[in-house]
Length: 439
Image (cartoon, rainbow, N blue to C red; front, side, top):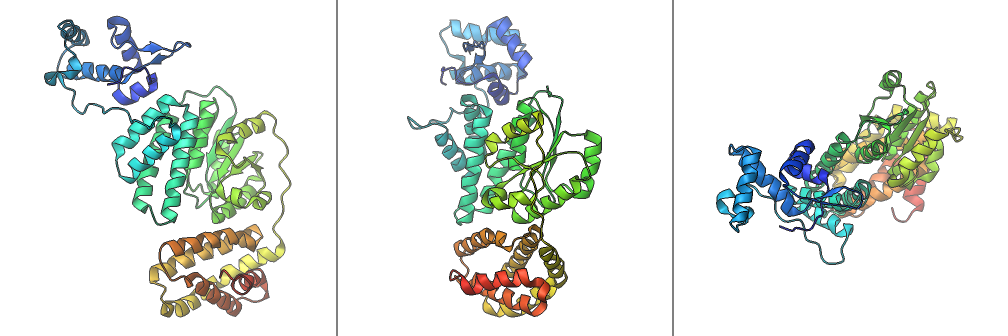
């Protein structure tokens, strides 16, 4: 095992399960292990130090007191033997060596090692890579450069048909578990203002808000995390009980941005400012003006700085672009006739080769996002989503013109079942299916 001092106290505790006070007592009373110290006085342990701790713990499990275990270690050393190399004192499930990276690699290499381990369902190696990364880099750097970017790469691999759903979920579970452990280990808050963080209705992607919770708690903020899919009508109860100075909501998809719009309207009855962010607002920057709140920026690693600026001197909420009455009427009319439109799609699409599962998924996805675009006041918000669906269908193997046929029939069904109130949707479908050669 390497004797290079590399790992901080937190890593050692994670690897061994030994309490910090116990470890310090061993070092003080018995001189085992003997970590190096940084110029700032912080302990740095080597791989060998970690294995020594596990060796001593194994002797305790065999019935020796810690003092007798240390005496045994010293006695073996005085005989010129290395206790870690003696089979009769082997530690079960001893840790393997830290991941070795090619010379010159940095955290990008750790990210590749972590994603490779996740794709191989190798939990032990994946956790080991994370442990090494947190020993070498600050928490925020590892979260952004390894976990966030690693999950983005795996998500892109799924989109391209190169990563399975099971592999992506396995990696996500490991990443979430580590984030939750880091959040649980944060110290008590040192600042008075309280922050509520959660996701609007139907939003189940919690990776980014969890990471923001971690960053803010590490900076001393009192953060309450409400989790995914927070019901709008129950939010008032949490506000009354916790009295936050700021509410933060994260929306990653078009239809959850529409849910966030409803949350923003709901919060107008409360004297609590709203801040928001999420991938959909990065792709569609014009949509930020629809939400009555403060946009946190496109970069998660800088969001906590925006939050601190807001809490230090809360500026007025930026002006909001109201949704036109035409779109509000179109939304109500579409919801009334959506079932008839989809019934016509069932009649027309099944003979053309679209499977039951494909048509069910297409109707659910497209109908939800049509409603969201109407609620947000601009059918062109659906353009990015259509491009994404087109790429997804192409990567997973249906006929190349499947999406075009679906949209053409949707257009015909909309013209059949919607009157002039449905003009925003009908006109958008007309442009999409007739004027755009891609479809």
